[in-house]
Length: 301
Image 1 (cartoon, rainbow, N blue to C red):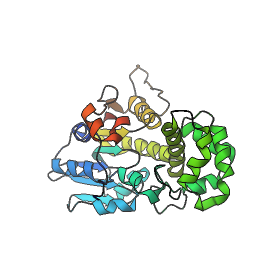
Image 2: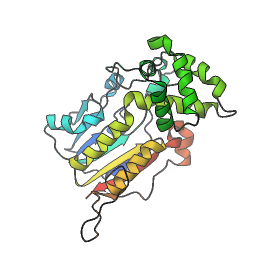
Image 3: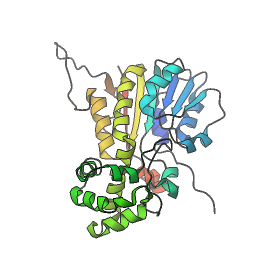
């Protein structure tokens, strides 16, 4: 049986066009994964350089044999510091394809998917000690309910939290299948997949501090991008997209556009895309992961 592709890049052509690549520029792909976006960037470069970030050990197998490319095996929340180690203080473009790769979803033992019965792991970095099972064990009911409410946008978060804590004594051996079985009585009719996805999304975001990492990367992009440099971000749920939209539009996460004494907006970015850019119907048909994708593009002023 043929092994599925590591990851099919979403909005590939649109994101590369959005970067407006200078063949001699310096670019950053903060979510390397299967390397699809990175390889397309490299095709556009002449004497330019590309730095990529990925904290997943599995991604190292996809590194291209190209002297212009450097993979940094760290979370992109440390982008600024690690680029400085390579003597880079400003770049011409940053690309982020957020979320979980197809490979991570398809590898049962990674515990990202409720399609398999496997250890409840969900770590994007295998170096981390905090699995989803440990997160449940270490959290109070109130803490779990807050996570489910904020990151899963769930109704009845308290009831789900109490249920998760009731099976928590299994600790580090807790599995995805046991979670699905435990929450089954609460699943709304005809909405099983959505309900389960909300629970798993909330746990995954909390375990990997995805929102904190996204905020850190966006804030650093303002300092790292050259004037005219492009920021291209592909997100997959409203929590991510809202942060990206607010930051590009106002320069902060409260969507509070500051103005100077003369009423001139002080946002450091100019939005290039009007609203979000969505995949075509053809891409949605060929790549199910694309269906929830939203891309936004901004240029540093």
